[in-house]
Length: 406
Image (cartoon, rainbow, N blue to C red; front, top):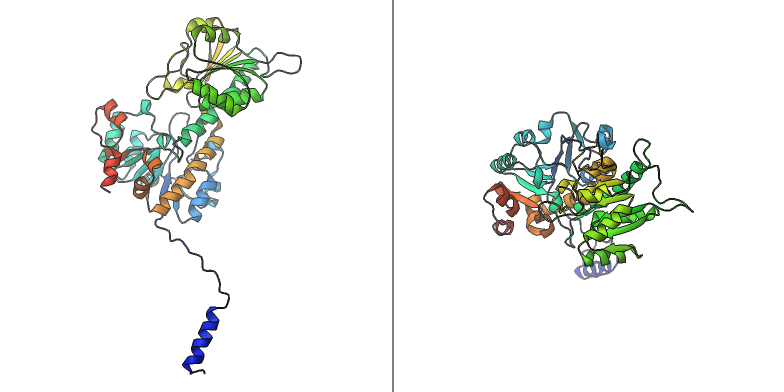
């Protein structure tokens, strides 16, 4: 045994110069989330908030996920897949609505709000047009923190879920039109795009936003002749730059639009209004002048529609014929491809929920993340949405002022 202090110092010095194992910092998890996913009960809503892969990611990061039995069956996800991913399968919806975070696609019904224990976080769509005042009042009485996923912004100020659902709706609208054109019962029996020696189908897209852009991409990919109308020259210019090729573009001039619609085989309505009703830009006279067997797909129908002849339909009876023109006016097109839409939702929300856990919960994420905060329309029972406050004549407070008091 070495007792000489000088020798000990020398050995320690030499040992400190020897290669050492790298010590990596292990970040300490600040909070474990308790997430409940109920089965969607809204009419023809087939999407599910989280797919099994997203559940597996959350569970492996220390979070707890409960899901109501058969929640994913309309998107072809079985209970066994969720169970294998680490979720707890519940057969009583009341168990789901006792979780700290309730994550669903459609806004809650009055019965679902009744099942909430109080003081929880609700993440769902807002859907201003379908939000009864009584539900808001009950959420307020239960001190719920409610987040509208259609108003959450990313770092670039974009609404990622609205954009993602718009991409799906735009692409699917062209596939629907192609199916209706080739329909044995009502369609003209033509193929979108045609082949060598056969004139391609003519597609008119009204609106140059996300829905319009992806409808145009799908139509061009099939070989269609495409014309685009929008009131914003900057959007039309951006569209041509993004697509990388010259296409027919025009502002919404009635005579030019009427002429294009008269020759069209397919017309896609993809206009959006920031608030309120979508402007009706296609009159019934324009529809009457269209070719027999042509197809109209009104993606804007959830905001009233941009065709005068539009009437809300559903996935069971999706079409009607007026003036010998086939109309497709289903509000929730994304539910037609529910599996793809569910993956899109999960891809956006998995990082958000992981970030929420790292921050220690919803309250801290609201305080630190401006984009997530923009989706909050109710904080612990206090209404923070100016729009909802004015529509339903309810008192509201600015969320930024509430954050200062956290």
